[in-house]
Each structure stands twice: as C-alpha cells, then as structure tokens.
Image (cartoon, rainbow, N blue to C red; front, top):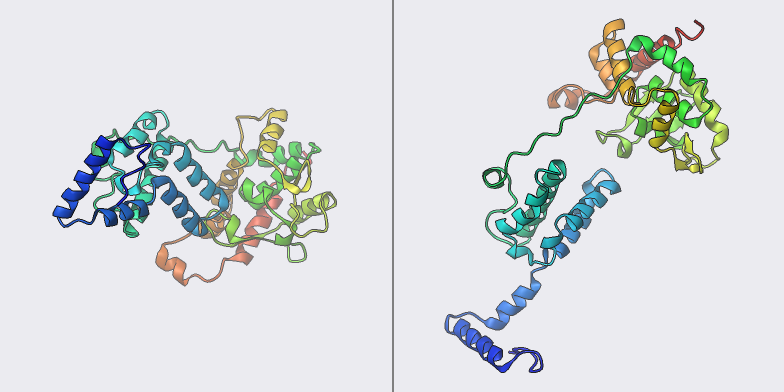
Length: 343
C-alpha cells in the first residue's frame, strides 16, 4: 500500500499513515478497499452536474436546466469540492445563511436544489442518513421562516377602456404594437405570442395551436382567431420568410429572432403608460369583461386563458377543449374591442 511520494510525504507522516493502516487491519478493515471506496464517491459538484444532466429531460425547457445548474455553481460553490457523502448540516447552513434574508427567494431555491442533489446521491448509494438540506423538521428549526415574496396583481386596464387603448395602439407603426394587439385579442400570454411561429398558425381554419412545450401548463393549447387577429397576421406576413419556423412577430434583426419583452416596455413608455399597464394585465381585462358582460360559462373563459379547469377527476373525463364555444367568446371579445374605434 502506497503512503505517498517520499519527496512530498515526510517520514514522520508516512509512519503515522502506516500505523493508521495497521490499526484498521487489526479492526478487520481493509485500508486499500476503503481508499478505493473513498475515491469512488463523487464530489458534490460532480454529482450535481450529473444530476442536472439526468433530470433536465423532464423539465419544461432548457432554460430551467441552465438556471438550476447556475444556482448550484454560484451559490453552492463551497460545497462543490467536498465529497457528496461528507456534506452535513453545517456545510449547508454555511451556504444558505449569507443569502437567507437578503435573497430569500433565491436562497429557498438553492436549498431545494441542494436537497434534490443529496436525495439523488442517497438513492445511488453515495450517502446514508437524513438529508441535511431538508426543510421541514430540520432547517426550519435552524433558520428563520423566510418572508414570502409579495406579488402584486399585474397592472390591468378596466375592460371599458380596452377599445380606446387599441385605437391608440393602432397609431403606432411598430411590430410590438401589432404583437400586443394580437395578444389582447387572443387573451394569450405575451411570451406565447412573441414565440409564435408560422408553423403554429392555420389561417384557413382561423386557429393558432401553441405546442405543449411553450405552454405554462405543459399542455397543447388551441387558440381561435377572430377576424381582426387574422388581419393582423396578414399584416405581419411580409415581415417574415417562407420558413415555417420563422417568428410571426419578428425582432428587429429579422424573422429568425424573437421580439423581446423589452419591446413592450418601450412601446408602453412611448405611449405614456409605462408602469401603469402590463401586457399580462390585459388577460385580467378579458376575464373581467367575460364575467361581467357575457353569459358564457366560467369554464369557457378560463379555458380561453389556458387555465386548469376542474379537479383531477373532472379533467380526466374531459376530452374536448370547448373550441367552438371559445371561438364564440373570442369573437365577441374582438367585437367589443372595436366598439369605440370610430368615436
């Protein structure tokens, strides 16, 4: 059994190692086997990287995998060189305490991701015992309860003012203005609209099919298109290319680039509505209008917004997506959005 190079390990230290090895042998422990086993245990960093690579296929998009990877690299840097079986509560606390109060949301995610890695390490036989990153019944006794992130409602326009806003929007010669109007008329999320490609659009059927990979709920969503929405698509068609994967509402660098979210902020700022309105808020405008001004069932309005409707049992028995009823509601919304245009 090697005890280290004579040029590096002093004789005194070599004797100590030899004595320790003899003691292990006297206790029935094979020091060579233990040394090999220690080498087989990966570091936290090695195992974390492997875990992210394995789990990324089940996450909604590549961006989430990158975020998980980056959090573990930046905030759990002090753990990365340690053997994964040596991570204890003190090591986890050393990572979390500096950011627990100042970056509470980030700290919570870091803790959750460390716990995920250590759970996976235990499942693969690299660890034993309780997870030192577990919150309930463990770290919740050692760290103060973090302040919940306060989320306000997205700034929304009263539905009675939407038509006048659209009239003003049509005076703006910008792709962002066409994009935002399309988002309002379809009651879609701005990211879904900005990421729309021509492959998803069927103008003849007046239908936009958003694939599951681009939906928040991870389910395909069919969006009926009103006559004005079809008109908007025909207006932006010359901006694109023959590539079906080209963006419907392209960015300034051409049809292969997506219009950025900042384009909406800049547009609203030019209109003097920056901070007062958000693109997402128009979904609330639509929902309020549907609830207060129409007799359409609540479920139809919620399905227009691509919200999950009903409990698990109800969803298991629902096969359709009420497309025809939703088309009627979306077309009625489009007509409502035109009502003040000539005033």
